[in-house]
Amino acid sequence: MTQSIVPSTPGPSTPLSESYTYHSPRPTAEGPYILGVDEAGRGPVLGPLVYGVAYCPVSFKGKLEGLGFADSKTLAAEARSSLFDTLSSEPSNLGWSVRVICPQAISSGMMKRPPINLNVQSREATFLLIRETLAKGVQLTEVYVDALGNTTTYEKDLSELFPGITFTVTTKADSKFKIVGAASVAAKVTRDACIECWHFEETAGNDQVEWNKAFGSGYPSDPNTQIWLKENVEPTFGFPKVVRFSWTTVKVLLEKRAHPVKWSDEGQASLVKAFETGKGLDKDRCRVTRDLQISSVNIL
Image (cartoon, rainbow, N blue to C red; front, side, top):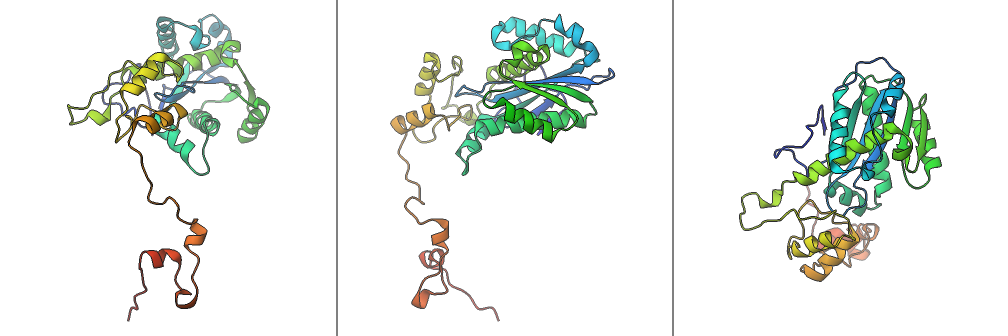
């Protein structure tokens, strides 16, 4: 889902358990433009993963250097909030977008067969944000991406996907390039707002169920996060949608504190074997039709 503008803090009606893309208004200054990409919330067991981009004209780079953008993790919350206001206060020169990937989407992708791991999901979010920026008519000539892993391959893939743009993919890009620092601020402020304003859909119409928001940092190693998880596991239904159910921390807790589950398809043959035909009288019937006692009906 795409939305034109995101408020500085999502309201109660914002469906934070879904994935969204938000865009600021398109800057009016002449191009060409540079763009930075960074994320917030890759490691936590709680909340969304947010990818952010920020962009400005090449001619604005000098002024951008003096605005104070940096790796959002090195900034206090008040400083990040102030810088986000700055990012939104230069509509003629500064633009930004964020992709909010909800916890359920992250885990569903990771649990698929074959799995869509976090690296793939991160790249897809980056591709989406760049495509949508270009679709707005922004002329991009330089893009800087903060990334982990094999940055050389990633840089090559981006260059092939978006010819005509010079890509620089590197670790700690948010501390090396101010435009990536600006993207880092957009991503971090958005994620923090999502966590702060999280609405537990699971409580709708049920006053007996309530979850507090003493999440801690959301990282699996945080004692406060560990306490919250242990205190809020529901034996039958598990956790609310704020939790990434594919994280090992969550799997272990469910095994220890939730009711055991036996899936109905455990021990069945593979799909190939399931649809193999039998022998003798069953030579025209596969295992599925035999087990379910399904037979052909002649239509006159």
